[in-house]
Structures are given as structure tokens and as C-alpha cells.
Length: 396
Image (cartoon, rainbow, N blue to C red; front, side, top):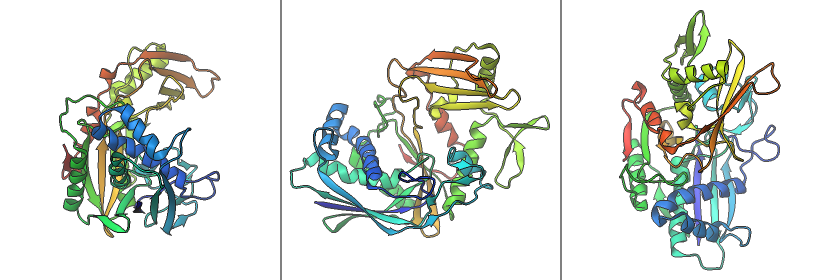
């Protein structure tokens, strides 16, 4: 069997090989890894058991003791490489793209309008019916919810699925308006057999479940401007602001400074107290957006890092921002919340503070972690902001 999935890059994609500072590169291994991720996400609600998901994953994608069941190659139809350029006036993009922008510049990338096709050819050995059913769903999920490259959960590298075919026969057609996109999402989720019971158990990892929430937040004619606007909204929702002339302010879309909302002032005060006393009994609420979670206090030049203990030292955000192309002059901002068990058992949350003049952390504490302390509604509340008044609730 031969699957072909064609995607359009709708926002800058920061994906490269060994020379990431010099040239972008679309690499088959990167997309095979992404397909693994989305395969796990779609397989869990269908199979219902993580061990069974692992068996199917090994069958399809291979493991240390067996080869994958398919060949994968990537054909670039159109690619626009952009040299280092300046996004200094896009404060929302800079916020969402933390780490991509240095000294007013960013790594090379492929911009929107680049198109490529993933081609998967099954090998001779038989593939189970379950695997055959789930693989095209993973290809769809990548182009309906996800992206590729650095900061893809924050909207960079968003991929819009243009077409999907099996053995030369098209099995999916791209929607061209919001109604069509909503219908595509709901059809996809109904195929998964997703139940809408919010009291259902949290999945062990990022996957579709009864707790999943999906919104189309807003639309726009320019994907960069749309992502920048979303970034500014997230900045204003989460940030305490920068002190200027006795007031805490943040930039708005026109570059003017406006008063910071300080929605999470309790987090700010909690961490500031820790800097002074070294005592802390709980973690900030905002870690629901992912870890590590950092603070910098310009008045004292203290850097605070909050991260999980263990090898990984991070927990990716459960919120996926995806910019989907509807037509050449219309784009939709899709928000998907995937609640799941936040951290492995026996993991603690480490909080440390270090002044820029200090070699070692001045204070370091490990907080016992409790799954019940993670409030995913904090992320849901973000979708209640005025800018999203016209949002469409896709699921549940």
C-alpha cells in the first residue's frame, strides 16, 4: 500500500539538520518521529491500552529489534528558504518563539507557502488491520492539529493537510472555510470514537481523550499577523509586566505600552518571596502551561527556574496552537488542549534562584508534586478572552 499526504507550511518552520544556524532542512527522520507522536495520540482512544499502543507502534515504526513496516520519503514540491531577517516589531511572535530569536535575528527557516509530500510505501510483510486503520489518521492529525520544528506547539511550523491518498485514490479533501474545517475535525474525532465525558481518566501521555478540548479561536488573512496577535494575547494573559515609570506595562500590537493585567499576581508574589526567604510550599499555577517555567526580576537580577526533577527536566505544553489555511486569503487559529498526566510518578518540582552575579543557586527547593494540583482550566480560561468572542467550540 502507498499513502501520500501533501502538506502546506503555513507559518515559519524552524527545522534543520546539523547546520541549523545556516540552512533549514526538511528531513524524513523528523517527520517519522512526528508520525510516531500522532500515531500514539490517535491510537490510545481506539485501542484503550498503552501496552497495546506500543505493540502497534513497534509493528509500524520499528524498534531496536525490528524494522519499520514502511518506507518513508519526502518530496518537496515548493520551498521558500528565508535568510536571517528581522522580526523585532512582532512582539507576539517573539514571545511564542522563545529561544528562536537572538539579538534581533532568528535561525533560517522555510516560510509559509512551502509545500511537501510524505510518501509511505508498505513493505512486503503483512500489516495488521488496526495499524492500517490508524496510520492515515496519524497523517491527518499532523496536518489538522500539529506542526513541525522548534516551537511547533506555539504555532510555528504549522502544517495544513492539502490532500491524502491511498494507492493513488484521494481519500480526503481540504476544507476551504470554517464550517468545512469544523466538519473535518468532528468527522475525524467521531472516527476515533472519542467520548465527551469530561470526568474520564487522564491519559498517561498526550493523546485524544474525553478531556480533549478544541476551539477555532479566530480567523485572519495573514498567518503571521494572526500568530503574532495570538502571541500578544498569551503574553498579556500570562505576564506580570515590566516596570516602567512606576507602572507595570506590556507592548500592544501597535508597539505602545499598556498596563499589564497581572492575572497571575499570586504566582509572581510567591516566587518573589522565595527569592527573599528561600521558603516555598507550592508551585506556581501557571506551570499548567508546561515546564520549565522561568522568572526574571530586573530589580534584583534574580533568575528563577522551575522544572521537574529527573532526566527529562521538562514537560511540554498541553496546549497546541495551529494555524490552518482555509484558502489563499483566509487562515484559522486552532487551539487544542490535551490534558494528560502531567508528570511521572515520584517526580518532584525543583525551584531554584540564582543572581546573575552568583555562581551557584542561592536557594533551591523540591516541591512534592500532586496531579490534582494541576489546573488545566487555567488554559481553558485563556480562550474566554474578548479577542475570542467569535470562537467556534469544535469539541466537546
